[in-house]
Image 1 (cartoon, rainbow, N blue to C red):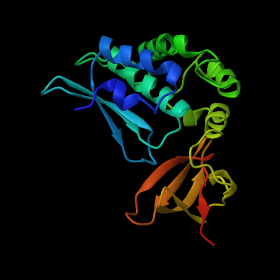
Image 2 (cartoon, helix red, strand yellow):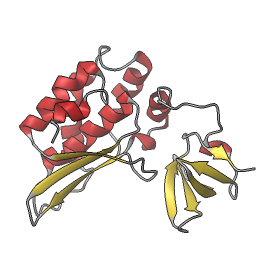
Image 3 (cartoon, one colour):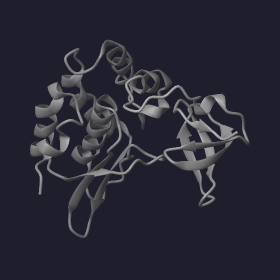
Image 4 (cartoon, rainbow, N blue to C red):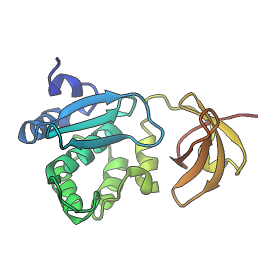
Amino acid sequence: MISIEEALTGKVPQAALSYCTQLWVEAPFDFKLTRARSSKLGDYRYDPKTANHSVTVNHDLNPYQFLITYVHEVAHRVVHQPKSRQKPHGIEWKRTFQQLMLPLLRPEVFPDDILRALAKHMKNPKASTAADPKLLQAVSNYDLTKSDGPTLRNLLPGQEFVFRKRAFRKIKTNRTRAVCLDLSNQRRYLIPILVEVEQVR
């Protein structure tokens, strides 16, 4: 079984590696890299039967998106209290996320464009990066497999596209995400409108 440091090496910026490892030392959890998920970038779960905490992050994220997602989920781990009725992204989580991200808001960790957008985002962090179009755009500039394809925002309702090797039909656009129908299982998903897609002509 590999250590948390080994699991994070190459996934987060090198300048953030020791800090991310220390977060795990202070509040341990099972960590797993997962396949690409169109509905979420990561998640935190608690199993009351085993009192086990687990965090997952999509394996294909660029280092900056991976780092933000990792700390986001660790904040859930830190504030979790069994049988608590606090909101998942309520004030306790917001404060903890802000505290955990503060040591990382420096140029050794993030490029200037992400740093500026992230600093504004952290004044009142939202449930996901996708809910902040400026931050999402800044982070997306560093995607590992960037192409010149259209973004989901460019497509009209009813148009079909491929995203992460899955076929969808765009139904409607909300503020930062689009409601899309997965053509293979007929389920609806919310996908950030700034992601790049392959349009089906």
